[in-house]
Structures are given as C-alpha cells and as structure tokens.
Length: 266
Image (cartoon, rainbow, N blue to C red; front, side, top):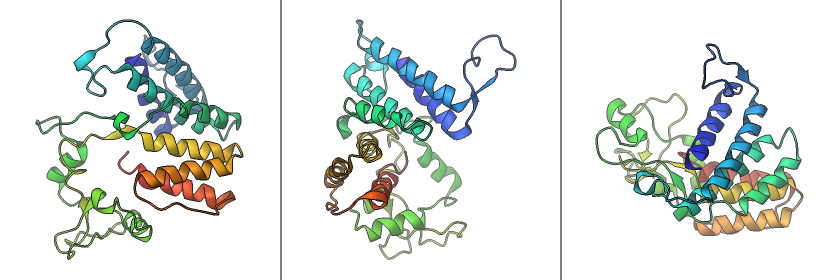
C-alpha cells in the first residue's frame, strides 16, 4: 500500500509536468514504451491508489521505522492517499465536471491536520540535505525570494512572511523580493532559517492542500457558502482574518490565491 501510494504520487507529478508519459509499458520488455495519454495515466493512478488504500487496511506490521515519511503509521498513509486522490480528481475536473464532487468526497478522509503532512525526509548528514539548502551552498545567490509572492504576502499582512523568508544582508531587516532576472545586490531575501535548513522536510501532500482542494471543490459544485467557510477556517488556522461577502469569480480567486501562498515550496 505504501509503495502503491508512492508510485501514484511520483507518476502524478511526472504526468503533471510532461503530460503524456510512458507508464503502462514503462516497466517490462518494451524497448520503446508508448506514451500514455495524460487522462489515461490519471485514471490508472486513481485505480492504483484505491488498491493502495485497500492494502493499507490489511494485516501485517508494515515497514515500521524504515518508513521515513510516517514511521509505518497506516492511518496517516491512508489519509495521504485520499488527499492524493482528491488532487487527481481535481486535475480531471476540467474534462469531466463530475470529478469535482469526487474530489470533495475524498477530502473527507484526507490529511486531517498539519501534523499528518506528507513530507520528504532530510537531515544534516551529507547527501541527505534538502535540495534548497544544497542549491544555496553550491550556487550561492542564483535564486532569491520572488517579488510577486513577497509583495502579495505583504499586501495580505500574511504572518507567514518571515517564517518563509529571511531578509537580505543589506535590506535593513526588510523582506525584499527579486524581480524576474534581477541581479542579486544583497538586498533580496532568501529562505528563512527553518525553511532553508538542511533538515527541512519538503511538503508534498498537506493538510493545507486538502482543505483548499475542499474549498475549490465546494465552489465548483455550487456550494459557495461552504467553500467560503472552508477557506476562512484554513485562514484562521494560519492567523489570517476571515473574508466576507465573496461569491462567484472573486471567491474562486481568493481560494486559489490562498492555495498559491500555502503551497510555497510544495
């Protein structure tokens, strides 16, 4: 069940990035495996996750401490699998709107708290460090915080700004983002000490994503008051004030903006 959930997650990301990919013939004797259509891959992954959920509910002790994500906790793996299913259904929503209701159902059993987030394993040991940290020590200032997200978080008075980013050395304590292509001049921010640390555990499937998928799915299925309530519940959990009077396109924009900020580094 763990292996099937991992496979589905990896192939979902692969298909999201490249579209049609080799999957059905990727393992075996085919010298030139065919490219499967993206929608076919997603449907195959939904079936695979269902198998994984069934197997996670079976007997056996599981991987125990060898599991670097959840330490063999099958309940947390099952929640992650349901959130992954919700993500897959959302990706299929534009081709078949009935998938939005399916995504909403999956969020009921998805990741129930931030403590259950699916994150990668990293440590301070050489070779196990987070890749943002590795990039920083190997490539220096080739990447800085982006101006768009920094300015957006400032406009929102988002309390996560300084937990995401650390001010540049010559910025006078201010978090300043870099414009696309802007040369580094010492003022641009980098990741905070927590998020830029070698042992920072990269978020892959999270409570935040589960809740914001839920809000969008509620919106897409016509339950706008419920969508606003879900959005506000998430905002409250990160120290943001509730929004009121939103409906239609403005409500969807607010949900997607929240998702954009919440999934930083995902």
